[in-house]
Image (cartoon, rainbow, N blue to C red; front, side, top):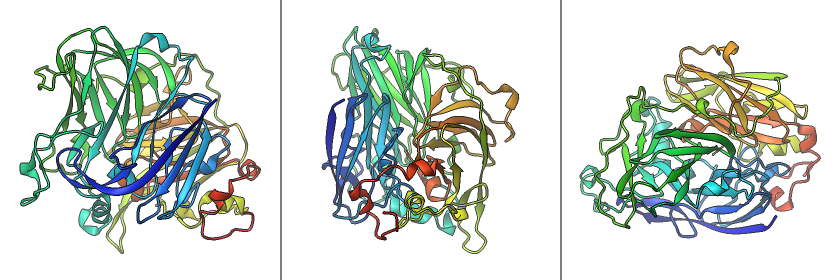
Length: 509
Ligand code: C2O
């Protein structure tokens, strides 16, 4: 493979993605980072210059980091933060392909714009002859306050555990906002900002890569007048499957082929699923739109939405997808049950999340992988560590959600098979798990008051985060970590500049 070098200067600035001007994070002076693009087998190099007044990291979401666990970018788990005015280089080979993204994993930084797409092409992709061009569609919710202010409120008694409601949503960093809802006297808002626009050429077939990099919001994605042929879920090629409306939760990605066979002017729609919000910002219009045009016109389309009779906004379930290549799903030889709950701390009156009754507390100065190198084998309860000693152990994760809110869980360093999931009670339906042809991915939803069973092969020595990808819930403590094959971790030699990030010198490093 080739070496692909990307230089990221991370800074703060002001920007108005939807007409409302606010402080944001920038990469190379731009809101939303550049697309990292390469071929399977290439080596990605990201040179980070941190011009923020605090630490930062870059995590490549969905990348396995096989043999390079120290480049996974998770503070407290796989690295110490890159300090203010410091530099750091991530360097890893990718032996996978598909649709990914990268984001800061430090506190809530990505909520302020520190993220971007990461696309890995495969010359042997079985669908490569079925499309002519590629389009990236990055969906996200958007707040008009900076995330630090929102987090302070969320982790205070006043919030009663109610997560901050977004003020808007963005498609490829754009949308408009009705400024009459902006705080009174704010002169920093301009209504009718420009929407994202996609210029179709009649007859062309587009591979649309849809990424949800929200802090808090699931979307239902559709394009008026055009059906979508799903071919990929998070790096796994699927048998093609036609849908009109595609639900996509936080951290998830899909590729779909769309044929430009219906000339005209159409809305692309991303409906925010606000039904689970504890409250909704008054100015929020949950229907996020972009323009699809065959004649480069910016005129607003008059197209109407697909309106099948759907229950619960969902006419497609990811379990309808089938892998393109048949796989053998091995039997599990280890399982972990993880319960998801929230509680109000009696002393502080702050609402926090728990996994197996334990709220994760980040140890920024002494990440778990450093502890492994120092031969520490016991971890404090607030680290939510699950240890797997033997390489190639087949692990089941049984998630039981006691909340009336769904949680999109993401596993680092691996893909898992989604064996089953249900929403009426937290006891898994073990007799009806799909071990024949489940899809494999890295981000899956645990339904409200429900369960999900995930299976993965632990064959990648490292420290791997496993957490709800709703960013507010990360901060509330819904985070665990798998320590896989610590003996093999200790045989991997970490790079010197990585060691130098941690303030303490530990014995083995
Ligand atoms: Cu998108 Cu722990 O990450």
